[in-house]
Image (cartoon, rainbow, N blue to C red; front, top):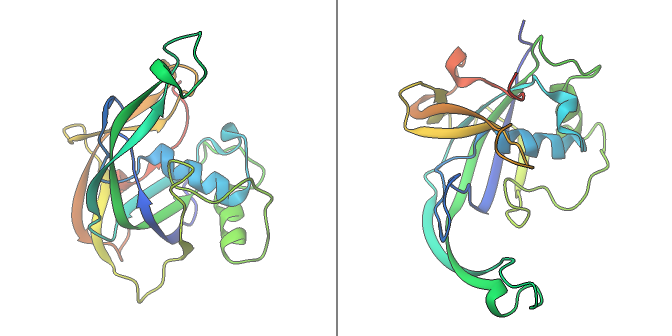
Length: 216
């Protein structure tokens, strides 16, 4: 059985959610994948091991319409062994899309698949409410480490309650990672999604929830 959900408001001034197969031109997805949201929640709780809360469930909705822009940046690569990193053939220009003014509603709940003695939703709730101060490293980011979260708190009745909800749909136009294999790609689990505009103050449909766990 799924547990009671915790609803959060998250704002990020500048962010990018890189398209999985983007290369020289780093296009961004319109919203963060479930795996990216899970990583942020682990960071809030101060948890370094992803498997600790495998089985937790998350949902996400866009509350804003982020502006899209493009920047050029220098990307380091290993092309020539005789040249230091970031010099000569070991650097190249890349274009990257950025999103400005990203505001999200994020929900988290436990499930029967989450085996942690203390569910992630409880740890995140305690951290957001100021009851605990978890030990963690660096600033809280959503995606890349430079894309820092400006605000995270409970979702309030006065917050915008209409937006674009991410829902699972086999015919959807968004292929998003639910669990990422950081060593290779064989262990990455994907889901097919679409964004649906509507009210967010009711009970979320089952299709809005993503269970974060590796492939069986």
